[in-house]
Image (tube, rainbow, N blue to C red):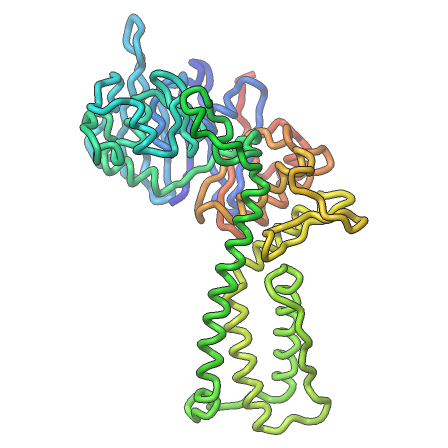
Length: 443
Protein backbone atom coordinates (compact mmCIF):
# COMPACT_ATOMS: atom_id res chain seq x y z
CA UNK A 1 0.00 0.00 0.00
CA UNK A 2 1.43 3.38 -1.03
CA UNK A 3 0.89 6.93 0.12
CA UNK A 4 -1.18 8.76 -2.48
CA UNK A 5 -1.66 12.22 -0.96
CA UNK A 6 -0.69 14.13 2.18
CA UNK A 7 -2.56 17.24 3.27
CA UNK A 8 -1.19 19.35 6.12
CA UNK A 9 -3.31 22.22 7.42
CA UNK A 10 -2.00 25.22 9.35
CA UNK A 11 1.59 24.01 9.51
CA UNK A 12 3.41 26.41 11.85
CA UNK A 13 -0.03 28.10 12.10
CA UNK A 14 0.65 29.52 8.63
CA UNK A 15 0.89 27.04 5.71
CA UNK A 16 -1.43 24.48 4.17
CA UNK A 17 0.35 22.01 1.88
CA UNK A 18 -1.06 19.30 -0.36
CA UNK A 19 1.48 16.76 -1.63
CA UNK A 20 0.58 14.30 -4.39
CA UNK A 21 3.03 11.40 -4.52
CA UNK A 22 4.39 10.24 -7.87
CA UNK A 23 3.17 6.65 -7.99
CA UNK A 24 4.48 5.98 -11.53
CA UNK A 25 8.20 6.74 -11.18
CA UNK A 26 8.24 6.21 -7.41
CA UNK A 27 10.07 9.51 -6.81
CA UNK A 28 8.67 12.80 -5.57
CA UNK A 29 10.78 15.93 -5.08
CA UNK A 30 9.79 18.62 -2.58
CA UNK A 31 11.12 22.10 -3.17
CA UNK A 32 10.33 25.55 -1.83
CA UNK A 33 11.69 28.49 0.11
CA UNK A 34 13.35 28.14 3.50
CA UNK A 35 10.89 27.90 6.35
CA UNK A 36 7.94 26.39 4.48
CA UNK A 37 8.35 23.01 6.17
CA UNK A 38 10.08 20.62 3.76
CA UNK A 39 12.01 18.85 6.51
CA UNK A 40 8.98 18.92 8.79
CA UNK A 41 6.92 17.12 6.15
CA UNK A 42 9.49 14.29 6.19
CA UNK A 43 9.42 14.21 10.00
CA UNK A 44 5.63 14.00 10.02
CA UNK A 45 5.60 11.00 7.67
CA UNK A 46 8.39 9.30 9.61
CA UNK A 47 6.70 9.96 12.97
CA UNK A 48 3.43 8.55 11.70
CA UNK A 49 4.98 5.40 10.24
CA UNK A 50 6.97 4.77 13.45
CA UNK A 51 4.04 5.67 15.75
CA UNK A 52 6.08 8.45 17.31
CA UNK A 53 3.00 10.36 18.42
CA UNK A 54 4.93 12.45 20.93
CA UNK A 55 6.88 13.99 18.04
CA UNK A 56 3.69 14.40 16.04
CA UNK A 57 2.09 16.31 18.92
CA UNK A 58 5.07 18.66 19.11
CA UNK A 59 4.69 19.82 15.49
CA UNK A 60 2.41 22.82 14.98
CA UNK A 61 -0.48 21.91 12.66
CA UNK A 62 -4.25 21.63 12.99
CA UNK A 63 -5.04 18.63 10.79
CA UNK A 64 -3.45 15.93 8.64
CA UNK A 65 -5.12 13.98 5.89
CA UNK A 66 -3.27 10.93 4.59
CA UNK A 67 -4.73 9.21 1.53
CA UNK A 68 -3.61 5.72 0.59
CA UNK A 69 -3.62 3.88 -2.72
CA UNK A 70 -6.41 1.58 -1.47
CA UNK A 71 -8.78 4.55 -1.12
CA UNK A 72 -8.63 4.84 2.67
CA UNK A 73 -7.93 8.17 4.37
CA UNK A 74 -6.33 8.63 7.78
CA UNK A 75 -7.52 11.87 9.36
CA UNK A 76 -5.54 13.29 12.28
CA UNK A 77 -6.72 16.29 14.27
CA UNK A 78 -4.39 18.16 16.61
CA UNK A 79 -6.02 20.24 19.32
CA UNK A 80 -4.41 22.67 21.76
CA UNK A 81 -6.47 23.25 24.94
CA UNK A 82 -7.70 26.76 25.54
CA UNK A 83 -5.39 28.56 27.92
CA UNK A 84 -2.48 26.32 26.94
CA UNK A 85 -1.43 22.84 27.89
CA UNK A 86 -0.26 19.79 26.01
CA UNK A 87 -1.82 19.25 22.57
CA UNK A 88 -3.87 16.13 21.91
CA UNK A 89 -4.26 14.03 18.76
CA UNK A 90 -7.33 12.28 17.40
CA UNK A 91 -7.04 9.55 14.74
CA UNK A 92 -9.88 8.51 12.42
CA UNK A 93 -9.79 6.02 9.55
CA UNK A 94 -12.18 6.93 6.74
CA UNK A 95 -13.30 4.93 3.75
CA UNK A 96 -13.24 6.38 0.26
CA UNK A 97 -16.81 7.60 0.73
CA UNK A 98 -15.82 9.45 3.91
CA UNK A 99 -17.46 7.04 6.37
CA UNK A 100 -15.56 6.43 9.62
CA UNK A 101 -14.37 2.82 9.70
CA UNK A 102 -13.38 2.60 13.38
CA UNK A 103 -14.11 4.65 16.50
CA UNK A 104 -11.68 7.58 16.80
CA UNK A 105 -8.64 7.07 19.02
CA UNK A 106 -6.74 9.58 21.13
CA UNK A 107 -3.35 8.48 22.52
CA UNK A 108 -2.66 9.12 26.20
CA UNK A 109 -0.17 11.70 27.35
CA UNK A 110 0.45 11.31 31.05
CA UNK A 111 3.65 9.57 32.08
CA UNK A 112 2.48 6.77 34.36
CA UNK A 113 4.10 4.17 36.57
CA UNK A 114 4.32 1.06 34.39
CA UNK A 115 5.28 -1.31 37.18
CA UNK A 116 8.95 -1.92 36.35
CA UNK A 117 12.13 0.08 36.97
CA UNK A 118 12.79 2.34 34.04
CA UNK A 119 16.33 1.06 33.63
CA UNK A 120 14.79 -2.31 32.66
CA UNK A 121 13.22 -0.83 29.54
CA UNK A 122 16.41 -1.12 27.52
CA UNK A 123 16.86 -4.70 28.73
CA UNK A 124 13.48 -5.55 27.24
CA UNK A 125 13.97 -3.39 24.13
CA UNK A 126 17.67 -3.48 23.08
CA UNK A 127 17.01 -0.86 20.39
CA UNK A 128 16.64 1.72 23.16
CA UNK A 129 19.44 3.34 25.14
CA UNK A 130 18.64 5.54 28.13
CA UNK A 131 20.05 9.01 27.62
CA UNK A 132 18.40 10.78 30.55
CA UNK A 133 16.20 10.11 33.59
CA UNK A 134 13.06 10.13 31.40
CA UNK A 135 14.30 9.70 27.84
CA UNK A 136 15.66 6.97 25.54
CA UNK A 137 17.42 7.05 22.20
CA UNK A 138 15.73 4.78 19.62
CA UNK A 139 18.32 3.32 17.23
CA UNK A 140 15.58 2.26 14.80
CA UNK A 141 14.07 5.69 14.22
CA UNK A 142 16.98 7.90 15.29
CA UNK A 143 14.71 9.86 17.65
CA UNK A 144 14.85 10.46 21.39
CA UNK A 145 11.65 9.26 23.09
CA UNK A 146 10.11 10.12 26.43
CA UNK A 147 8.28 7.42 28.39
CA UNK A 148 5.02 8.11 26.59
CA UNK A 149 6.80 7.77 23.25
CA UNK A 150 8.34 4.46 24.37
CA UNK A 151 4.93 3.17 25.43
CA UNK A 152 3.33 4.27 22.17
CA UNK A 153 5.91 2.59 19.97
CA UNK A 154 6.77 -0.51 22.03
CA UNK A 155 3.62 -1.17 24.04
CA UNK A 156 3.19 -4.69 22.62
CA UNK A 157 6.66 -5.81 23.70
CA UNK A 158 6.50 -4.12 27.09
CA UNK A 159 3.07 -5.59 27.84
CA UNK A 160 4.67 -9.05 27.97
CA UNK A 161 6.53 -8.02 31.11
CA UNK A 162 4.38 -5.40 32.80
CA UNK A 163 1.16 -3.45 32.70
CA UNK A 164 0.98 -0.87 29.93
CA UNK A 165 -1.73 1.80 30.26
CA UNK A 166 -4.43 0.97 27.71
CA UNK A 167 -4.59 4.51 26.41
CA UNK A 168 -0.93 4.25 25.36
CA UNK A 169 -1.65 1.23 23.15
CA UNK A 170 -2.40 2.13 19.56
CA UNK A 171 -5.49 0.27 18.31
CA UNK A 172 -4.91 -2.72 16.10
CA UNK A 173 -6.33 -1.00 13.01
CA UNK A 174 -3.79 1.83 13.34
CA UNK A 175 -0.87 -0.52 13.92
CA UNK A 176 -1.82 -2.59 10.87
CA UNK A 177 -2.24 0.55 8.76
CA UNK A 178 1.19 2.06 9.46
CA UNK A 179 2.89 -1.32 9.06
CA UNK A 180 1.63 -1.39 5.47
CA UNK A 181 3.70 1.65 4.50
CA UNK A 182 7.22 1.19 5.91
CA UNK A 183 9.28 4.37 5.99
CA UNK A 184 13.01 4.96 6.32
CA UNK A 185 14.29 8.47 7.04
CA UNK A 186 17.90 8.83 5.89
CA UNK A 187 20.05 11.03 8.09
CA UNK A 188 23.31 11.94 6.40
CA UNK A 189 25.28 11.77 9.63
CA UNK A 190 24.85 7.99 9.87
CA UNK A 191 28.38 6.99 8.92
CA UNK A 192 28.74 4.70 11.93
CA UNK A 193 26.61 1.78 12.98
CA UNK A 194 26.00 0.03 16.25
CA UNK A 195 25.91 2.67 18.98
CA UNK A 196 26.41 5.66 16.70
CA UNK A 197 24.90 8.81 18.10
CA UNK A 198 23.97 7.33 21.47
CA UNK A 199 24.92 8.85 24.75
CA UNK A 200 27.39 6.85 26.84
CA UNK A 201 26.56 8.59 30.08
CA UNK A 202 24.24 5.90 31.39
CA UNK A 203 25.92 2.73 30.15
CA UNK A 204 29.61 3.40 29.61
CA UNK A 205 30.69 -0.12 30.46
CA UNK A 206 28.49 -1.67 27.79
CA UNK A 207 29.32 0.67 24.92
CA UNK A 208 31.59 -0.60 22.18
CA UNK A 209 33.55 1.53 19.78
CA UNK A 210 31.32 2.34 16.81
CA UNK A 211 31.99 0.37 13.66
CA UNK A 212 32.15 2.38 10.43
CA UNK A 213 29.05 1.64 8.39
CA UNK A 214 31.15 0.99 5.26
CA UNK A 215 32.85 -1.83 7.15
CA UNK A 216 29.53 -3.19 8.44
CA UNK A 217 28.04 -3.11 4.96
CA UNK A 218 31.09 -4.85 3.46
CA UNK A 219 30.57 -7.75 5.88
CA UNK A 220 26.86 -7.69 5.11
CA UNK A 221 27.50 -8.08 1.36
CA UNK A 222 29.95 -10.92 1.96
CA UNK A 223 27.29 -12.81 3.92
CA UNK A 224 24.66 -12.16 1.26
CA UNK A 225 26.97 -13.44 -1.47
CA UNK A 226 27.83 -16.56 0.51
CA UNK A 227 24.14 -17.25 1.11
CA UNK A 228 23.30 -16.77 -2.58
CA UNK A 229 26.18 -19.03 -3.64
CA UNK A 230 25.07 -21.70 -1.18
CA UNK A 231 21.58 -21.63 -2.70
CA UNK A 232 23.13 -21.71 -6.19
CA UNK A 233 25.31 -24.68 -5.25
CA UNK A 234 22.45 -26.65 -3.68
CA UNK A 235 20.23 -26.05 -6.69
CA UNK A 236 23.04 -26.99 -9.07
CA UNK A 237 23.71 -30.25 -7.26
CA UNK A 238 20.02 -31.12 -7.44
CA UNK A 239 19.94 -30.54 -11.20
CA UNK A 240 23.24 -32.35 -11.80
CA UNK A 241 22.12 -35.42 -9.86
CA UNK A 242 18.99 -35.77 -11.99
CA UNK A 243 20.58 -34.86 -15.33
CA UNK A 244 21.08 -38.44 -16.63
CA UNK A 245 17.52 -39.48 -15.76
CA UNK A 246 16.04 -36.37 -17.38
CA UNK A 247 18.24 -36.79 -20.45
CA UNK A 248 16.94 -40.34 -20.97
CA UNK A 249 13.30 -39.49 -20.23
CA UNK A 250 11.50 -39.38 -23.62
CA UNK A 251 8.60 -37.32 -22.19
CA UNK A 252 10.94 -34.40 -21.46
CA UNK A 253 12.23 -34.14 -25.02
CA UNK A 254 9.24 -33.59 -27.26
CA UNK A 255 11.17 -31.46 -29.75
CA UNK A 256 14.87 -30.59 -30.09
CA UNK A 257 15.69 -27.02 -31.22
CA UNK A 258 17.78 -26.44 -34.31
CA UNK A 259 21.53 -25.95 -34.24
CA UNK A 260 21.41 -22.17 -34.77
CA UNK A 261 19.12 -21.79 -31.76
CA UNK A 262 21.41 -23.95 -29.61
CA UNK A 263 24.53 -21.98 -30.59
CA UNK A 264 22.78 -18.65 -29.91
CA UNK A 265 21.65 -19.80 -26.44
CA UNK A 266 25.13 -21.14 -25.71
CA UNK A 267 26.67 -17.74 -26.43
CA UNK A 268 23.99 -15.93 -24.40
CA UNK A 269 24.50 -18.10 -21.32
CA UNK A 270 28.27 -17.68 -21.69
CA UNK A 271 27.89 -13.89 -21.72
CA UNK A 272 25.60 -14.11 -18.71
CA UNK A 273 28.16 -16.11 -16.77
CA UNK A 274 30.86 -13.55 -17.63
CA UNK A 275 28.61 -10.86 -16.08
CA UNK A 276 28.50 -12.84 -12.85
CA UNK A 277 32.26 -13.24 -12.92
CA UNK A 278 32.65 -9.46 -13.24
CA UNK A 279 30.20 -9.02 -10.36
CA UNK A 280 32.51 -11.10 -8.15
CA UNK A 281 30.03 -13.95 -7.77
CA UNK A 282 31.69 -16.69 -9.83
CA UNK A 283 35.23 -17.70 -10.76
CA UNK A 284 36.40 -17.41 -14.35
CA UNK A 285 36.52 -20.94 -15.76
CA UNK A 286 37.73 -22.09 -19.16
CA UNK A 287 34.68 -22.17 -21.40
CA UNK A 288 34.11 -25.18 -23.64
CA UNK A 289 33.96 -24.05 -27.27
CA UNK A 290 31.39 -25.77 -29.43
CA UNK A 291 32.93 -27.54 -32.44
CA UNK A 292 32.66 -25.80 -35.80
CA UNK A 293 31.27 -28.91 -37.48
CA UNK A 294 27.57 -29.64 -37.72
CA UNK A 295 26.14 -31.03 -34.47
CA UNK A 296 24.16 -34.27 -34.63
CA UNK A 297 20.73 -34.78 -33.09
CA UNK A 298 22.06 -36.50 -29.97
CA UNK A 299 24.47 -33.66 -29.26
CA UNK A 300 21.72 -31.09 -29.75
CA UNK A 301 19.51 -32.97 -27.32
CA UNK A 302 22.21 -33.01 -24.63
CA UNK A 303 23.03 -29.34 -25.15
CA UNK A 304 19.37 -28.34 -25.05
CA UNK A 305 18.91 -29.85 -21.59
CA UNK A 306 22.32 -28.59 -20.46
CA UNK A 307 21.49 -25.00 -21.46
CA UNK A 308 18.11 -25.19 -19.72
CA UNK A 309 19.92 -26.25 -16.55
CA UNK A 310 22.53 -23.48 -16.91
CA UNK A 311 19.72 -20.93 -17.27
CA UNK A 312 17.94 -22.23 -14.16
CA UNK A 313 21.17 -22.40 -12.13
CA UNK A 314 22.24 -18.85 -12.97
CA UNK A 315 18.75 -17.55 -12.25
CA UNK A 316 19.50 -18.24 -8.58
CA UNK A 317 22.02 -15.38 -8.78
CA UNK A 318 19.98 -12.95 -10.90
CA UNK A 319 18.66 -10.75 -8.10
CA UNK A 320 21.92 -10.22 -6.22
CA UNK A 321 23.86 -9.84 -9.47
CA UNK A 322 21.58 -7.06 -10.74
CA UNK A 323 21.96 -5.20 -7.46
CA UNK A 324 25.75 -5.62 -7.42
CA UNK A 325 26.02 -4.40 -11.02
CA UNK A 326 24.01 -1.25 -10.28
CA UNK A 327 25.92 -0.73 -7.02
CA UNK A 328 29.27 -0.83 -8.85
CA UNK A 329 27.95 1.32 -11.69
CA UNK A 330 26.73 4.09 -9.38
CA UNK A 331 29.80 4.13 -7.14
CA UNK A 332 32.50 3.80 -9.78
CA UNK A 333 30.95 6.61 -11.81
CA UNK A 334 31.69 8.91 -8.88
CA UNK A 335 35.00 7.62 -7.50
CA UNK A 336 38.13 9.30 -8.85
CA UNK A 337 41.56 7.64 -8.94
CA UNK A 338 40.10 4.56 -7.28
CA UNK A 339 37.69 1.76 -8.09
CA UNK A 340 35.29 -0.38 -6.08
CA UNK A 341 35.33 -4.16 -6.53
CA UNK A 342 33.08 -6.81 -5.05
CA UNK A 343 34.85 -9.62 -3.22
CA UNK A 344 33.21 -12.79 -1.86
CA UNK A 345 35.37 -12.79 1.27
CA UNK A 346 35.61 -9.07 2.02
CA UNK A 347 32.28 -7.96 0.56
CA UNK A 348 33.80 -5.05 -1.30
CA UNK A 349 37.20 -3.42 -1.51
CA UNK A 350 38.64 -0.25 -2.98
CA UNK A 351 41.75 -0.24 -5.18
CA UNK A 352 43.67 2.83 -6.33
CA UNK A 353 44.55 3.39 -9.99
CA UNK A 354 48.12 2.36 -9.01
CA UNK A 355 46.80 -1.01 -7.86
CA UNK A 356 47.06 -0.43 -4.09
CA UNK A 357 44.19 -1.61 -1.89
CA UNK A 358 42.80 1.24 0.20
CA UNK A 359 41.09 0.89 3.56
CA UNK A 360 37.37 1.64 3.49
CA UNK A 361 37.85 4.11 6.33
CA UNK A 362 40.29 6.11 4.20
CA UNK A 363 37.52 7.12 1.82
CA UNK A 364 36.39 10.71 2.12
CA UNK A 365 33.19 11.42 4.06
CA UNK A 366 31.40 12.17 0.78
CA UNK A 367 32.57 8.88 -0.77
CA UNK A 368 31.49 6.96 2.33
CA UNK A 369 28.12 8.72 2.30
CA UNK A 370 27.53 7.75 -1.33
CA UNK A 371 28.63 4.16 -0.76
CA UNK A 372 26.53 3.77 2.40
CA UNK A 373 23.47 5.36 0.83
CA UNK A 374 23.59 3.32 -2.38
CA UNK A 375 24.31 0.01 -0.66
CA UNK A 376 21.68 0.54 2.04
CA UNK A 377 18.98 1.32 -0.50
CA UNK A 378 19.80 -1.57 -2.81
CA UNK A 379 20.37 -4.31 -0.26
CA UNK A 380 18.90 -3.44 3.12
CA UNK A 381 15.52 -1.82 2.60
CA UNK A 382 12.22 -3.68 2.58
CA UNK A 383 10.40 -3.80 -0.75
CA UNK A 384 7.80 -1.01 -0.89
CA UNK A 385 9.58 1.20 1.66
CA UNK A 386 9.13 4.95 1.30
CA UNK A 387 12.62 6.42 1.70
CA UNK A 388 12.77 10.02 2.95
CA UNK A 389 15.88 12.00 2.04
CA UNK A 390 16.44 15.51 3.37
CA UNK A 391 18.63 17.91 1.38
CA UNK A 392 20.98 15.35 -0.21
CA UNK A 393 22.98 18.21 -1.71
CA UNK A 394 24.54 18.84 1.71
CA UNK A 395 26.58 15.63 1.44
CA UNK A 396 27.01 15.41 -2.33
CA UNK A 397 29.83 16.88 -4.35
CA UNK A 398 28.52 19.37 -6.92
CA UNK A 399 29.66 17.11 -9.76
CA UNK A 400 27.58 14.25 -8.30
CA UNK A 401 24.33 16.16 -7.89
CA UNK A 402 23.21 15.89 -11.53
CA UNK A 403 23.43 12.09 -11.29
CA UNK A 404 21.44 11.84 -8.07
CA UNK A 405 17.92 11.60 -9.54
CA UNK A 406 18.84 9.23 -12.42
CA UNK A 407 20.55 6.94 -9.89
CA UNK A 408 17.53 7.04 -7.54
CA UNK A 409 15.16 6.17 -10.37
CA UNK A 410 17.26 3.11 -11.25
CA UNK A 411 17.36 2.06 -7.60
CA UNK A 412 13.60 2.64 -7.22
CA UNK A 413 12.90 0.33 -10.16
CA UNK A 414 15.33 -2.43 -9.17
CA UNK A 415 14.83 -2.44 -5.39
CA UNK A 416 11.11 -1.57 -5.63
CA UNK A 417 11.36 1.46 -3.36
CA UNK A 418 9.58 4.83 -3.26
CA UNK A 419 11.37 8.12 -2.56
CA UNK A 420 10.41 11.51 -1.17
CA UNK A 421 13.30 13.97 -1.44
CA UNK A 422 13.37 17.49 0.00
CA UNK A 423 15.86 19.72 -1.78
CA UNK A 424 16.90 23.31 -2.49
CA UNK A 425 19.26 22.37 -5.28
CA UNK A 426 18.43 23.00 -8.96
CA UNK A 427 21.35 20.68 -9.74
CA UNK A 428 19.60 17.85 -7.91
CA UNK A 429 16.32 18.47 -9.76
CA UNK A 430 18.15 19.14 -13.03
CA UNK A 431 15.64 18.57 -15.82
CA UNK A 432 13.13 16.52 -13.77
CA UNK A 433 10.74 19.29 -12.73
CA UNK A 434 7.94 16.90 -13.68
CA UNK A 435 8.70 15.03 -10.45
CA UNK A 436 8.50 18.11 -8.20
CA UNK A 437 5.91 19.38 -5.73
CA UNK A 438 6.33 22.98 -4.64
CA UNK A 439 5.61 23.91 -1.03
CA UNK A 440 4.43 27.48 -1.44
CA UNK A 441 5.02 30.23 1.10
CA UNK A 442 2.01 32.11 -0.22
CA UNK A 443 4.02 35.00 -1.64
